[in-house]
Image (cartoon, rainbow, N blue to C red; front, top):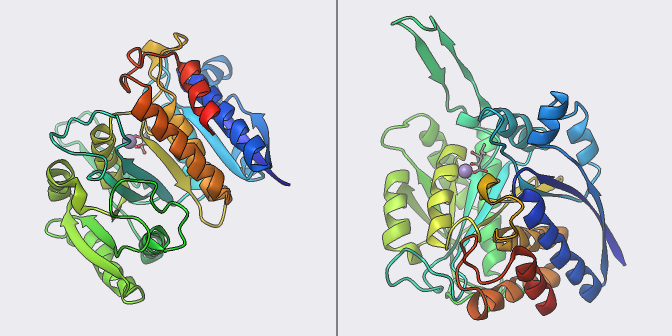
Length: 368
Ligand code: IPM
Ligand code: MN
């Protein structure tokens, strides 16, 4: 029997509540599909920082590297200045663990309301591959002549070819995997983007203005594309991407983009799939340990009320199972989520689901 070591980082606010439901579902999947999850919980987050003054222990990533995966709730605390925990925990772990891919599926589950008029689950089913360790997020820059009228601030979008190429290559491989006719995900979603269909990779950039950074991205994109003649290629400026994500989301299959644009367009994507209660993501190092986290934040105002939607965290758990190689279990959890959204939940929003947080977890677990 396979045993996986999972580091649990419940984090702040509603993080612990949604993570509990995720673990409930993962353990149900483990007993059904005959594998074992060994979990260890870490208290990284705002409360620990306020109590100890330390954001993250020095050896945190070294320790986390020993696990097969990391399962994270949410980071963000109302009493901590914005930036400290995000940079000190989330971004630091992404960088130190070299999780250079942020995989963010945009999937409208059945029964979920989308703000996009007339769009159905078959129209909203694509994946954003966001570069996750470079670009504007590297923090290269500075401020000089502070607090004078001549003050200058610089923050640079820095990419080297290696970073761009490994991300783009991952995206092409991902398209191939998504459309492989042996793909067990076949038929899971309602769109025609599944197995056996020709896959398409869209580069989302800004080649008309960012003529250095995206010149590199564009050249590498078409160079790598030559190795993937089975994948259709497309290019879209980021502003136009936002427009099409709203107007014609069915045009997209897989989108690859830089860190900053990926951050922005995946919030847009999340809202089109029903909001933060349902949007999942994974920080992936294909050669190392991944960290799976719902896109939504810590939602402090709902903390402890048992009304937050745990489905995003549960869907992250499904992504984690897929990455661990437990694909069948991952497919089953995803099917269970679909049944729950189609037949049970009244809304994806906190307090309006018609069920409590733990009842939603129970529903999904019972269907696994
Ligand atoms: C996300 C978040 C983070 C990001 C923040 C919290 C640093 O918005 O995961 O999308 O910008 O990457
Ligand atoms: Mn974001």
